[in-house]
Image (spheres, rainbow, N blue to C red):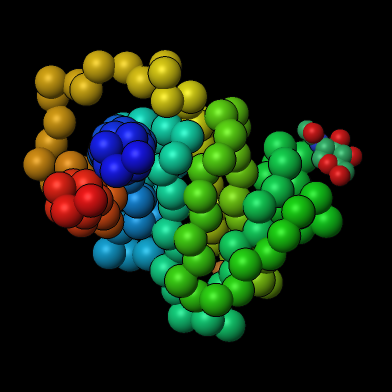
Length: 163
Ligand SMILES: *[C@@H]1O[C@H](CO)[C@@H](O)[C@H](O)[C@H]1NC(C)=O
Ligand SMILES: [Cu+2]
């Protein structure tokens, strides 16, 4: 009994490690955050977004917001096509499914006139291309890898030794 339980913990530990090691939290706009007159398409261009990654939109709460919209909402800068508007100022958006994802700011004319719009394509985990050999240190530093899973893994590993 004890050994099968530790086996389960051990397997679970590896699963946590395997799934979290590639999860990346992308700070939208890096140090500029979610703000006026930033070129989000250039920001997104050299990044590979995978299912399991997440986006973080940082802004002063009340000054902006984040609306997840469809392609029509993106083109028209209209939040009528939104399925949820985030307003916390530190909005974490998990990328749960592959495909095109559109985000706009619904405040004033920030989308139309101040470029507060972002479109990305999320790839399935299994379709992850090999890491590009040409990666600028600036862009790789901006992506914050999740270390949470690593800590959980170590804790789980210790636990399995004790069981
Ligand atoms: C976006 O959503 C609206 C209504 O929710 C729909 O009428 C429109 O066709 C959608 N656009 C696209 C490109 O899916
Ligand atoms: Cu805005």
